[in-house]
Image 1 (cartoon, one colour):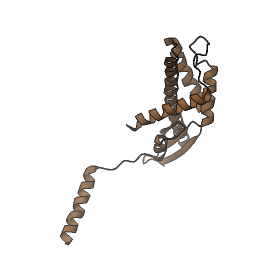
Image 2: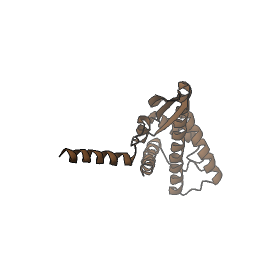
Image 3: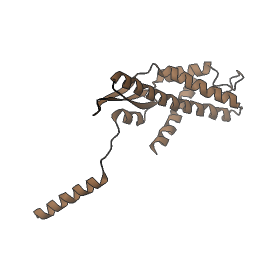
Image 4: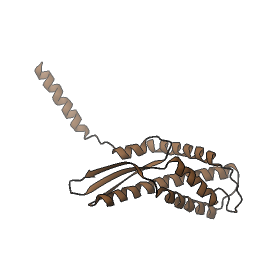
Length: 185
């Protein structure tokens, strides 16, 4: 009986070692991947200085969040342009994309991390992970500033897209669900 237990224990250990070491996501990275009503992104930074590592992580997370939001908002604009059958010129689409990235990036400079973890590395450097989130107030601010910039018109100043704030936030939430679904695959 003892021989069977010893054999079974050795067999289980051998099976586990052949699988390798299970990797886990860092807490802030995991938080960024969780479904949420607000857009989120994570970033990390490594440096001999914790402050520099922290700033690098925040910058990386904000850039990721700005890119994510710019893609979602550009998709909303394109969708509505097709729905209302007006022709955005290539130049106006490029201008809109640049304005969206610029405005969203400006708004995100004031966001603070909702998660921060710091790790001392074996070589003495510090690695910092953060998760950034764009709250509802900043989403509303983005809508207002993009509307003022004429992103929701066809480049002529004529408002061709009837997209009020509530509809914008609903469309943004739908785009975020689609983005998260693609991320999970």
